[in-house]
Image 1 (cartoon, rainbow, N blue to C red):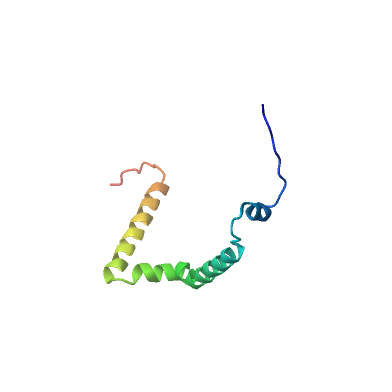
Image 2 (cartoon, helix red, strand yellow):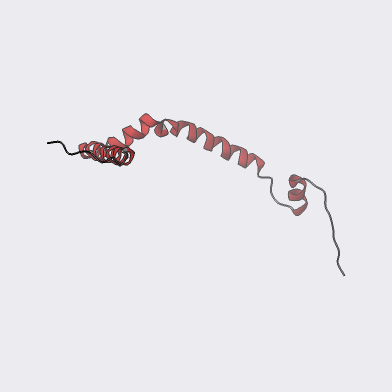
Length: 90
């Protein structure tokens, strides 16, 4: 024997039926707090803020980034050059 019961209700009505607490005010307050914190931290994730954070520790950080970007550009230039045989000049 197979019995199928279809219940047509909203999530809020289902929570009330099962006696679960209404968490919508808590959720709204939580989301407001998260939004406030995200907006306050947004400056840290701007390109200028990230570079300031990365390069702020010691002078070695600046040298490390200069070397890293220099190496990346050299690799990119090496890949762009086509294989062309050069004639020997005497």
